Length: 116
Ligand code: FES
Image 1 (cartoon, rainbow, N blue to C red):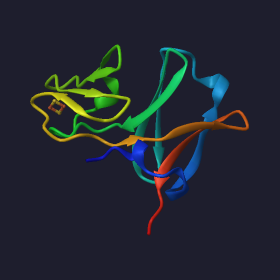
Image 2 (image 1 turned 90 degrees about the horizontal axis):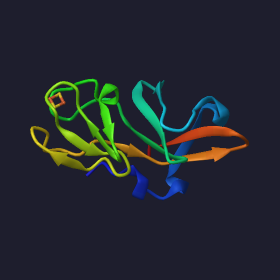
Image 3 (image 1 turned 30 degrees about the horizontal axis):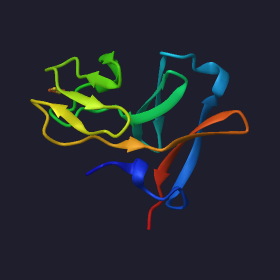
Image 4 (image 1 turned 30 degrees about the vertical axis):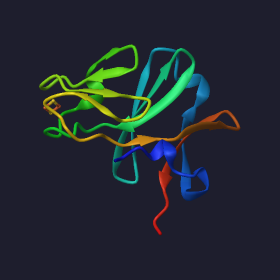
């Protein structure tokens, strides 16, 4: 439903987040881009970005524990795949946004769908 990673990058606007060197492996970074709260993860050297709001009850999802590629909401325990935003466990039933991420000129960039 919200898998923005499948959106054509040509239809995204990529926004600078931080220098690639500022995000170590197995760390996460919280940012707000155009009023959208996003958390960026580096897992095994790969970057992922999801919305930092749980679809169950707006919990602070990015603060949850990471189990491989699953993030566990600290509020009621819903799980989501950070690679796709897909919901994997109740009580959430709706996927979360998963944004495309790239590195350009040493900067981590997150892609947000362009307004049409
Ligand atoms: S707010 Fe995330 S599981 Fe309830």
